[in-house]
Amino acid sequence: MMAASWLIYGLSFYLKYPHFDCFWAATGEYIPAGSDDYNSFCAPSHFCRNDDVIARQDPSSSVSLANWIQDFDLLCLSEFEISFFSMAWFIGQLLFSPIIPKLQDRFGRKPVFNACSFVNFLTLLFMLFLPGRRNPSQALLYVLIFVNGMSTVGRVITGYTYFTEFYPEKYQSVVGTTWSVMEGLVVILMVIYFVYISKSWYWIILYAASTNLLFQAIAIWLLPESPKWLYEQKRYVECVRALKRMASFNGEKSLGKIHALLSASAEKAEEQDLGVNAASTRSPGSAAAQAEVKEQSPFQIVLKDGQMLRNLIGMVMLWTSASFGYYLIASQLKYIKGDFYVNNITSQVTEIFANAVSGAVFKFLGLNITITISYCLSLAGMLGLIFSSTTSQAWLSLFILGAKYGIC
Image (cartoon, rainbow, N blue to C red; front, side):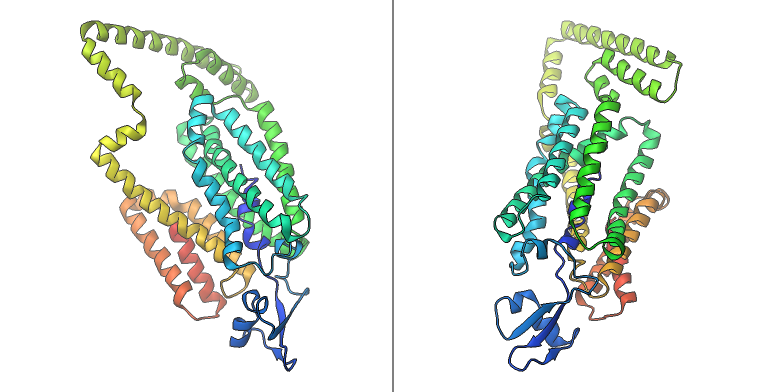
């Protein structure tokens, strides 16, 4: 599930501009780093289109990475073209979010998850063989990132549903928290990699593709279809087979509970059939009404219920604003003042902490107070990042902490 995290969370590294030493072309005078002139003129948006500044990459700088900017000659792309690498991923998610969940409910969790995971592997693999020039690598990267975003719907949403359905309900929150914490560790590991191991993006994508293929092969061989989904589809024999396979793997020799479940399921199905037949005999109109309700999609039901529709709109607005802030911070970290790596570490440690304690905070304070406090923290942090002129790493880290904690 985490294989593509090395791609989307790594975009701030793969598209990070190197550090430049800049000189005035007319006089050869050095432009001091950090000065107003440096910030205004020693930027690709200026020196790629003007000849009054000479810019030389500083290979000794910790932020001068062997990334896509260098390997695919993307230095002089417009701001829109750079931002479109992230946009392509979200466009893929947007277009396929209404489609993939329907497929997982119709065909099962396992085939949809494995198909999307394999597509994710292919996108990562193809990136490793792109030619080292802007054309056609820029266009191909857009396409590959778009397809990766498309596959993420099945890899993450279906994958999360798939794996949590193997656990009893009381353990599902622990599973979700563990997954979120592991996601947060990805960027921290990337910082360690780029600072202490290598400046090349290539080995990270190779690692992501390799682990994707390895663990998918293990999942195909080891994991059965979701017993919960099989049960809901009334495929009771297959459900019991899946449960027996799980019991065998876990060393559980007693199958009494599984046989009891099969018997209870068969009796329940029989009772439901008898109830429907009896209802249709007593009241044909009532049976027709029940059939009409079953034919309606959940979306149609929500649209007809005013309270449910208002709740849906409210939650969508909250979730959209939180998601926008979450990914905005991640994409803007490469531009925020202060140490690039410290800012990333601060962001991810905050995310891990927020994911770890959010359940306890919610349980203690309740939903309304928790959301209000979180959004106030996020707003304060973002306003600090936008309007503060400070260069203090401590203050910048504090702003990032508030902004990231509030939306996690």
